[in-house]
Image (cartoon, rainbow, N blue to C red; front, side, top):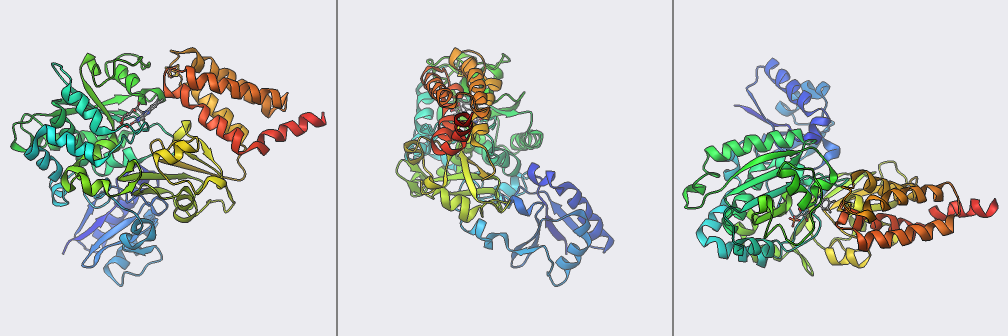
Length: 517
Ligand SMILES: Cc1cc2nc3c(=O)[nH]c(=O)nc-3n(C[C@H](O)[C@H](O)[C@H](O)COP(=O)(O)O)c2cc1C
Ligand code: SF4
């Protein structure tokens, strides 16, 4: 009997030594005369256990982690013997971190072989596209609209409305562009989809193409994601050969094909108009809107631009029906969100759950508090443009409106945790510095404002004229918020102002020095 082992090919697992572990397991198995198959699956998203080795057994898969190459021999002995081993974690599904999740977008994650279209189909893949083909473009758009799905890239715009606009726009060639630039700090869900379940993204893009009349698509991936680029290229080629892409989608009358495009890795190239400029071979600078990309996007043609997660959620919405998806969530935030827990946490990873869970549950309960053992002081939600939340706001439910009501944003669902050793003045200065470095330079509030902001916070840190300089920073933030052309300059005030508002003791530490002088 063949011994079936699973070792993730996910970049996070590889960074922890998954390739070496896979190689060592093979040597150890062969040395014992075993017939072994090692499947390089996606990560389950329990990153503190990576590399997580799994073995197929009659009672399901059993996990062992975090494994090192030195563990290979004892692991093979345990797997083929009693199963007992210090690294044994039992069935991954039974671990609270996975058990408490509602995995819809990530339903197949870690289960399938990302390089096998047959395996994808065997795990329920392609049902969404089959449904879209059966019901046609108008009903497909309607289904996505009814699901309540909102763009997972940050802005939370209803995906169904975006698709309807492109479907109704006139153009010789329409495009589907997948935004896989994923530059937010603490985010990795897009990368996980591309590396762990790439056919799901391809299926989602094909559904979007069918729904809108777009026959061509691009996945724009940053160059820092070599494993995702490779995974997508391999999957696209297999999808073409398997009839999931091409002139006849799954044998139907609909055509759609797509390619990978690699971006050089500028944060602003994640902004949709800047991304289009970059895709067209130009420098990544922001375009003024209107016209909207839905009317005049790539090469001046009607274009859907969606985040990886938005597109990868379309298949399950079509397969299970809009109502099944919108049953999850709260208020206007329907369905589930793949939340990414990162920073100073005991249990960092991918946690997909219905909107509505509180920030405190995510950080304390699921994330297990700080890895350093110190108290949690601040949590930045939504990437580098997201606000810092103090413990007093931990009862905030994770949904678009609740976060906006607290002057925050959920963005792409990244949560970065800091312990009490963090100096919030430096975090505020970092936000301005980040904006200054990443600014495309097109508008003055961002190009000049961010540099002046970083300098002024530097004066606060040095204890110079603190009260007056805080007032200057606050005033500058108003100018950036309301005068910037895009959200890079427009949202940088969120981390800066939240740091000033929620952590005044850090800022006035300098004031005390000023008073003493
Ligand atoms: C500075 C900046 C960076 C952005 N980076 C990303 C990104 O990496 N990925 C992404 O999907 N959206 C990003 N966005 C949002 C996109 O402009 C756009 O709203 C999104 O791709 C639309 O897809 P969605 O409706 O599926 O969210 C960024 C926006 C700004 C202003
Ligand atoms: S806000 Fe910054 S990144 Fe956005 S258009 Fe203006 S200069 Fe460019």
